[in-house]
Image (cartoon, rainbow over all chains, first blue to last red; front, top):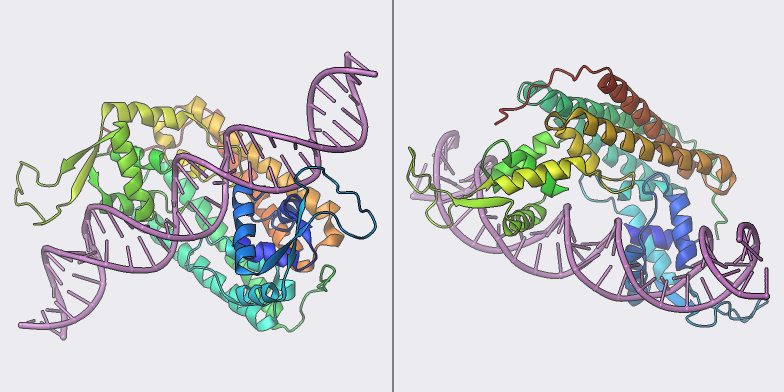
Amino acid sequence: MLELAVLGLLHEGPMHGYELRKQLATKLGAIRAAISYGSLYPTLRRLQAAGWITEESGAKPGAEAPPLTSKRGRVVYKITAEGKERFQELLGNAGPETYEDPSFGVHFAFFSRTDQATRLRILEGRRRRVEERREGLRDALGRAAERLDAYTLELQRHGLDACEREVRWLEELIAHERSGKPPDVTPPTSR
Amino acid sequence: MLELAVLGLLHEGPMHGYELRKQLATKLGAIRAAISYGSLYPTLRRLQAAGWITEESGAKPGAEAPPLTSKRGRVVYKITAEGKERFQELLGNAGPETYEDPSFGVHFAFFSRTDQATRLRILEGRRRRVEERREGLRDALGRAAERLDAYTLELQRHGLDACEREVRWLEELIAHERSGKPPDVTPPTSR
DNA sequence: TTTCCGATGTATCGGCTCGATACATCGGGC
DNA sequence: GCCCGATGTATCGAGCCGATACATCGGAAA
């Protein structure tokens, strides 16, 4: 999940870890408040070991040359050609078949880099999963209503409401997507 | 998080792992579809090592005596007195200060075993966290609106909507809680 | 001026949870 | 008699998190 997000951000330009985390926070702010460094740095290692990204030690040879920090300078990461391929591959793969799947949000956040057919496939997959969960909650509210206390039932109702709302949201997105007109997408400094 | 849920369920009677997972699925259905065995069994080990629960090997000395399974019979877990104390302690502790905190739902699901003051404290804590997240998303939508593409913005809007909805839900619950009248709580076979 | 603090920055560690997998039994339908 | 789905216990590797450590830098307060 982080793999996709990191590749997606580095696709827009080289960055060091701290900056990556901040960008992640705004780009994925709707999914998760912030990414832990305990996840980020190991992910960067994995990506580097796999050859998807490379490390460029801080001091650029260009304009502002002074090595910004004396000891252990900032490490700038850059996506490779293989990394871009990997990114496209990950964009197409739907996440696991669970409702709690956090990767849907990541996929969605990078929809402006995804072709319409894939967008539709991902949206419909998500809809199916949310619908399944919705049915499960409806059953639970109907079947075992007497065996659960009022608070638990209230929680289920709230969960059911959230599911119904998300399904409607997805329906709108799917309809909009099918209508051919992709929304006014302004790809962020797409290069 | 699982610790609280398992203690809460075993509080209502002894159970073996498989049954525990099923009960968990209905009780926490609004939080998480199902709990992985890869989480459940290690949790049972931890609880047992800490002395919160004990293991009663399957065959009861009572009526249906035949050892239900020949090899490796089902293992029935039972909460201890210390376990009940621990459960009450956990009920009072609010989870971490994050929005994604899954333990809020678990706390809520066991509200019928919680005193009203604690219920209010937990609800207000949750409200504060969701409000903070809501403000963060509002800022992001206002401030960096031009720097993000249409899909990312749509995702943020949906997240913001969910936050506002949850705050309203919490407001209602808090008002109801403050009005003194605890909802028609029917504690499930409280013993 | 010195001191202190918050932002910037990299990194590890233990612990929890997940999905996949393995293995075994039981009851019922074909 | 056979197979299959539900029941049942259990482990493994991997991902992610929160806590923690350490270090620098600019500016505000003292």
